[in-house]
Image (cartoon, one colour):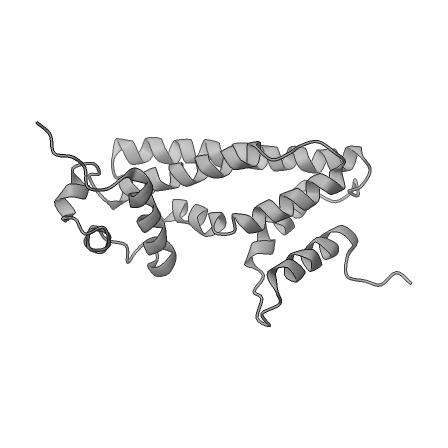
Length: 191
């Protein structure tokens, strides 16, 4: 009879995320992971041949969860309402961008499982981009977004708002409101 697994995928991925964000891809090891989970390294190796398999599986889990939550966003109402919801959503899932950057650090020539996962992650990334692009097109259709601005610039601005450091400790609600205002109306006073 097989032994019962001492950790769930949810717990494994939670600790994986914690280690990757705090220490980075290069410093991530099964030894550190096993110590936090209070299991042997061998119990992790039963399921994953190497760290790249585990990390790529974790990234698939995160992207799938992100896209599921994004797809569940209310997509009714005018563009401005959807824009507010989108920016709130981005800030609620702010670490997805840190996590997605790890995809580029995983070597492509490890195992077939890693190659398949990286391919699927590329599909997820394209899906995410296309959905955000559709959102921008809605803004153009409602004549809220200027037609001459390239979609890639607008998406770049939206995706990079997470990276803006809040050095002065502005309360999160005020921080997000200010970013929404700047993205919506610019920073220049029109008076």
